[in-house]
Structure formats: C-alpha cells, structure tokens
Length: 310
Image (cartoon, rainbow, N blue to C red; front, side, top):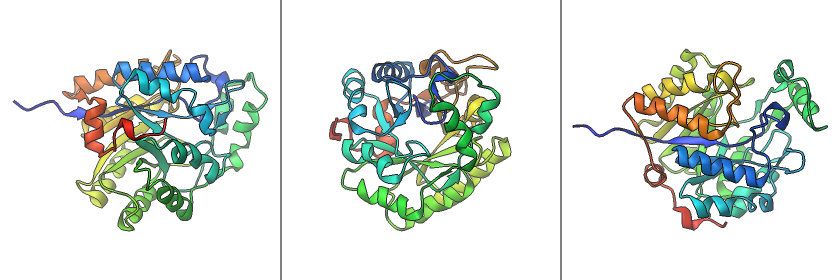
C-alpha cells in the first residue's frame, strides 16, 4: 500500500501587505507574533514565515533585535522551521531588508526573484478607517512604488548568507522570476533542491487564474525537473482555491495572515492556525498528510534548528 505523500505547509504569520487596522487578528507585538507562530505550528505548519512589526503602531520593521524578542520563544517551545523575510517591505532598501537573515542565520529565508510594481492601493476601496498615521499613505503611495531586487541585489543576499548555510524560499511573482532562479542556479549561487514559492494574485505580479498556476508549474517543471519543491501562495481570496489546485498537482501550500486576512467570503480569519487547519483538511482530503518539521528539513536540505543564531 502506498504511503501518503508528505506535504509541507508554510504559514506566513504577519507581513508587509496588510496594516493593523485591517484586522484585529493580525499579530503585531512580539508576544502576538510568537503566539501566532506557535499556534500555526501546533495546527500542522512545518514552516513559519516571519516578519517583525513595531509593537507601538504595527509598522513593518527589519531590526534584528526586534526579531530576537520572539524567535527564541518559538524555537524553545516548538521544532517548527523558522523562515525569516529578506523582503521586509517595499519601502526598505536591500541592506535593511537583509539584516535579520544575515545576523540571525535562520535555516530558511525568503528571497524575491526580481524587482516589481507592488500595488496595495486598491485595498483603500475596502478599508476606510485607520488607527495609525502611516497606514493610509503606505497604501496610497504604492501606485508609485517599486519593490527592488536587482540581479546585483539578489546575488548580494545569496553571497552574504552563504557562510550561514541559510537556504531560501524562492518567491516567484511571475514567469520571469522562474528564469531568474534558473540563472542563479546556473551561477552556483542557489543550491539544489530549490524551494519555489509561486505567488499569485498580487497587483504587479501574475494573476490568480488557474491557467496562470498551470503555466507556472509547467515552466518550473521544464526549468528545474526533479531539482525543486513547489509551493503555492494565493493572495487574498485566491488563497485556498489556488493552494488546493497546487496540492492536487503534487505541490505544497502556503497560507497565513500575511497573504490573506480571510477565512471565507466576508469572514475574517480569527488566527493563522485557523488557516493552517483549513488547508490541512484539504491536504488530508486529497490523500496526503502534513509533513513534520523534521521531514521538511530533510526534503529541503536544511542545516538544522541548532545551527541558527537565536
């Protein structure tokens, strides 16, 4: 009898897309972020993807010392894989964004495969009232904002973290980003197997149509063959439908409040753990099982939880 396929669930706990006024459930303080990460791990996430926020106003920040206020507790109370952002927020420069991964030496870190328009301004049609002065301009001004990751920036991040033996969640927002990943694989800056996180439905990247997902998968298969693991991230209302498609095609899934605040039409998700439980139900309904953190470590070739600096 065939064994059930282990599926890696990543939970993106909090990030730079949403602002605190959009949901009372979005983790902001170090205590809230740690609680949310541990809840997601208990629900079945093998990986938690983490940003930090200013605990006073929820603004995205990349101060490594703020990360140190929640990372040790998560590591102490679970064996979940901790994945730190090098994306930070589109308002930040590459050196600022790099510091948590560079200094804290996580097992895994995210890495966007290119510069892109990153439009959040359409959220103003849904959200009208804001608690903090930074939130409305952050959204409004995104129609004239570029998230920068040039070829030189990407090479710098990869080379800076090489001695740390940090592996990367390769975030691909469009087909061209897959070709950029292949370029850095050929240059010897990315080790095999690649962990490709295909991102769908953010303004400025590829759309959320099933054909977009199919094209991403076909292109990645052609470029990387057996040298990659594929995961699907659907933004907003695309989260569960596209993740389900990806799972049915043999992929893995990312959920979490960084990517979507919702747990159904018009219903805010009460926690990251709720979204993990929801996608876990899909995994198991399709005949899979959720991978443990140690299984994910083996599949991704990670260095291990004791080789980090927190």
